[in-house]
Length: 423
Length: 211
Image (cartoon, rainbow over all chains, first blue to last red; front, side):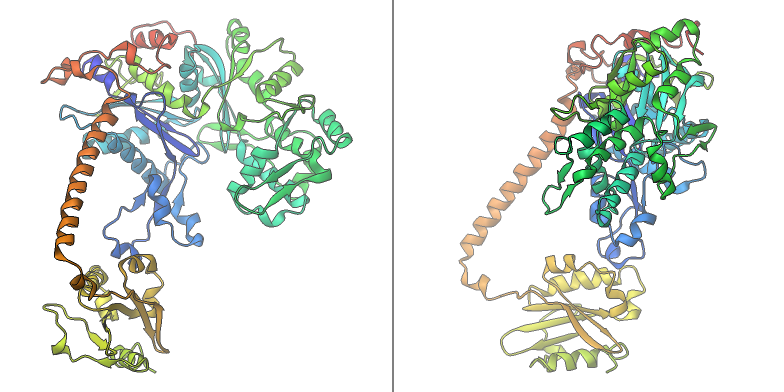
């Protein structure tokens, strides 16, 4: 076994986010390296691939755009393994991408020091990852070590737990909301696993509603590019303090609330004009999709977030964030509940919403919205904060965990904690 | 026209129609793998490397053809790669363009120039004083040495910079003797983090607040 000092100096964090993969050793300082969590399966029969010489079967990292071929191929060749936070056990292509991404990360940071004997890897997965994902990821890292000698031991922790660690908060509720889904996880020195609530709704659903709004406003020809719709959502979407009241305010003052977005570097301008009140629907939908206004969108084809089961976890589609937090907290011991409501931490890109100057009477931030939803359920004076540098929180938590947990604490499947020696 | 069945004839006809004439194979000033066809219009020479279906069966067929074609550019003024049209769809023209190679495709319907070759003017080197080239070569190798040295230094800095964990104190030999990192150099999110104390006790405590 290596010394504590060796382990501390060679702790390596890996955050498998739904869109991006953040990685790096403790020596990276405050920020990890970031690549997209995806892999491109090359066409090995292509002549150009033969001309270019031998290439990997799967390309990961910043080089992917250099290998992209026709647009038609992208849907089958470009694989985002963690899009839903969970990979099916038999999805070999996704697991291949995970292996390549992990190998890429470790080799990118292989120290030149000849005394390097491998890293202590702390990987972070969605809180709702089933046990087989842990087993598969351990196998993947063991496989990499047997070929490259780069991993001495590994551990895997849930992403909300990492966020709590990075924010120096031992008792809290973490709400991690990404592209495809959201997880509510109470933490009290340990993640309270049987209290995790999963929601089958995330930033992608906000984008889907934005596309419907753009269609209604005459911009239907522009909605086929996902990144474009996401940019529109981020630039015109607002969270209403109270949906009905905010819509009324916007309808009474159409110029004040007018939603105009000029797409940088193009001649395209999106102007919702008299329909600018619809910008409040986008924010509301993320936090509470039950309002009757959304029914008309569902009836016209907007995919209603349904309940789905991944592994052993049920992801609820229409549960609002207030109900979800209350449900998660009420699964914890009564004595703990008031402490949890005092420290609610929002994390993930889905909580970065603007409140434009002059619109404070109608639009609110994500923490203010969650606070309102909780107060409506009778929770008195909850404290809701948003994570600083949410993009890096999970990786930072991994580094703290690897630095602090001693090398002699062996992995236990009862607690899902400790180091699994891979040699 | 029967381009795919008899490409040499079709290609010869194609270049003849442009005012070029065939250079006899024995007059091509190349040792080793000569181009299948060579033409001249009196002012410039054009070499052609033809790839038929049979040569494309092996993985290295195309690669060898490209390598040969690139070597021809030191002699010929223009160099083309000619291959059956059905295989051309997969070839990225950008790579050929970068090397100055042209691309000609053929099938049963005829011959088509899809990428014009770059003109290599071989008279230029003769007009330049040799001393300039030698100077340039020396300066390029100096620059290459400097870049290699900087890359080496950069890789060392990348490892050491944020670390600031006083790796200088590591004694050579057994890695288990590595000194603990200097706490002052740790990232801010580790400093004053109550979790460090909590997690250090993991595995040593029996009580658990939550299940």
